[in-house]
Image 1: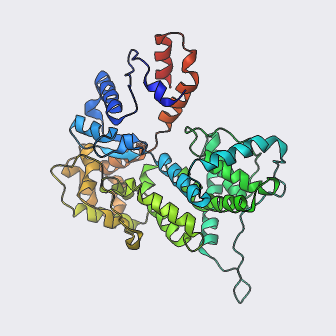
Image 2 (image 1 turned 45 degrees about the vertical axis):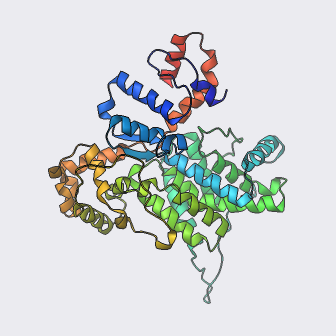
Image 3 (image 1 turned 135 degrees about the horizontal axis):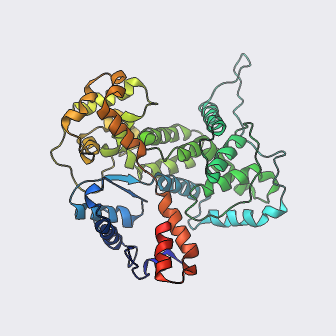
Length: 420
């Protein structure tokens, strides 16, 4: 059943009904639930996918919730949705099609699975740049250095079982395999393409590229799949698999955008599509969220110190503007550094945590002393725990859609929905 039909179900005890998927209807349901649970005063942030019904300036659910609560909140766009939109826009640019072209290609691959050899003998792997200098030594290109860095990162994650979920681990394993790393896996049968499985497109492209010599592909399809797979292995997989970490969100998004600028020399179509998509999703470059970078302990001490000093020197507003955050980057011709994105709204994080001026004194101190400050550790731990993906909501909707009709009564349905 389509999602819109589900919204129309009658209200059951403890679960607000939603007449439709418009921003106002969703807002009313959220506010009703917050009232029932007596949580309105505790809301600090909104986590949402980036559809217009959520993010619209006037009638989006997020704007309406802020207006109803009459105070500013942190706008945490789902980073899995963001990167899913990126890959969708890039494939559209590569294929030249406008209506779900990957669905037909994926379905064909899925239906042919049983008729092809899907073992790991002689699979198609990444073609490492092999240019030699005058002394016979390989020249390290940006592509080669990126592949080396990603492969090392992926192998470290794999050896320490960083990603326990099967689909996350599968994407990691396929990336390692494609880049020529040593990993023992069995290629799994292609799975579902529903929205609860964000990385399904990336996994499909990886498998199709690995098995490309055994598939009936046109020269055009082979070229498209190979280009997509190079992009996924070099840039996408790592960015996606790290995307749930709020602490590194601003830094990773800026690095991803920056890498697409130099990647234009290798694949202009993919790079330009990625850049355009990134500029439409600058959520973690906004003043209120770029402050997360201060707590990213993988950044250099110099960078973090500059960010802290710039923030400390920026006057804290007495009031914060309610509404959709403004995206700061107008053009890639003038790519910013992190500290240039600092502005008054960076103080919003401290505001929603109800921290007073005296609780931000650690910003004046050398970074080596921050860990000793209780106020610093409190806000750092808060940012660490922030949810910047809404996977649970997606999976809940998928479960409800699949199994809601087995319920025999409103009580069973209420229990089932609350369990999801």
